[in-house]
Image (cartoon, rainbow, N blue to C red; front, top):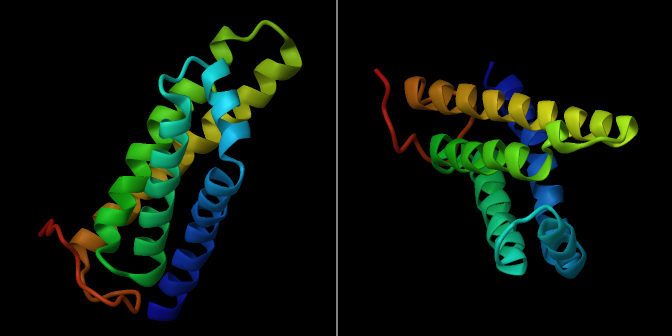
Length: 138
């Protein structure tokens, strides 16, 4: 079971770590896109969200306070869904569909992050982690 949880953590974290790299290597382009969506202080927001992706992704991947890392990812994906993928504002059907897909993906990732948080906070010795959880749920 530990190996399966580790493989799941790796697969889950890779998405966020890859995105973190993009936030740091394509900061200006992402800041321009963020600004077009109405995000204040777009460049700083891109760098801050890149740091959240990196810290949360590494935490889950390495199993260092993986519960906290899961919460950090949750705090990233849910506001991002609303701010960056507001499909309800789109009038073009193709753009609306693309934003809806990304909105739903982020909401699902938020659900998975919340489940991982509960999983690690409730079962501290599962998944070949480096440290135990920061939070304890019983």
